[in-house]
Image (cartoon, rainbow, N blue to C red; front, side, top):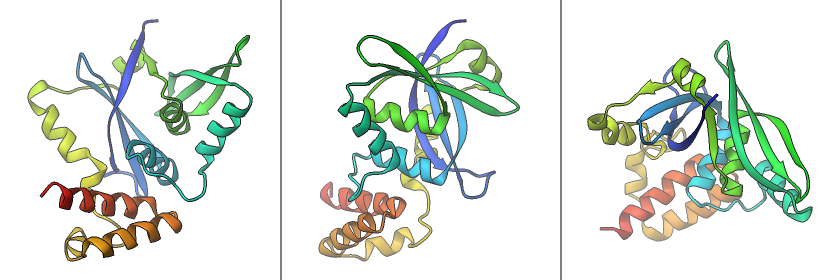
Length: 199
């Protein structure tokens, strides 16, 4: 089986699964995307890492990273190795300097951990052949814009409401959201702050 490296293309609200998100991985050279439905907690953990946001208290995946660092365990890669009845199966490949181990994992958790260890994400060609969707070059940019989590509506506030906040109010609300671990709202507030800086 040929191993294929994937990158994260986007993270968005799922249009078909309530209270879920769609994580889209892509094989960059062929523009073949692999959509995976994940839970909201895992989506927030992934989004936090993608957006370089720091939680006031460590999330579960942050604790795993700290634990591994303390005991000199390196995560070298994750592999999405199987697909059974619509469920993706993944494993985390780790090494303590002398012995390599494979740990079974949900794909959403494996991706969240891969981001924290800055390690590659792989799958096999048969999985891309089964579940992958070919994305044409001319629609790739539009797809990225449509699927990006930053464009999704916030469950607690409207995007228009953020526009009415002052810079100080946005910073205050951002800190409050982080303290309350409302990372979804924090992402939207951070985006509004970034937009103000660029104008």
